[in-house]
Amino acid sequence: SQKIEQNSEALNIQEGKTATLTCNYTNYSPAYLQWYRQDPGRGPVFLLLIRENEKEKRKERLKVTFDTTLKQSLFHITASQPADSATYLCALKMNTGFQKLVFGTGTRLLVSP
Amino acid sequence: EPEVTQTPSHQVTQMGQEVILRCVPISNHLYFYWYRQILGQKVEFLVSFYNNEISEKSEIFDDQFSVERPDGSNFTLKIRSTKLEDSAMYFCASIGDTTLISGANVLTFGAGSRLTVL
Figure (tube, chains in turn blue, red):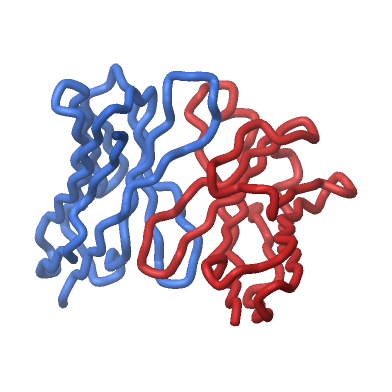
């Protein structure tokens, strides 16, 4: 069956450290992998995307890697801040004609001062 | 910055009642979506809408659900006869032509409508 798995347990880190979140998928062939941030009671907000033929993308303190052999993406936040505390969702866009995004379960990040 | 607007922010209804959730997508966006998120669970795709018709729908989107774009600006989700399990946050989202053409399909979400079915 098709799955997108993210750590269900919250990730607790100290301010200033690097947070690394994982997204694993099975039985999908995504053309794009996207990362969104979701705050409680709010809609997801787009952060970064990476294409299937890219290994790494960066944007300010954010870095995403994409390994289509391992079927895994890693999302890094460097120099983390308490304001980075949120749930982070990965989402896949397939190679087919369908236009929907399929979301993972999300990982909650808590950054302590 | 342009945003997707959803109303109401919270609706409480009795089981069996009809509910209409409203969305105003970003004005030059072309593709529209409804997703839902049951408390503590993942964001689930319901339906996509393009060129005034449903483009794709999930298994969740059964005959109790319908969507329409009645006036060129609003995009509505109707649940005909609500069930307890319809209680969730419903998100509207849209895609602009830039990301649609590239294939990346970056979604801009609204703040959501929380539906509570009693």
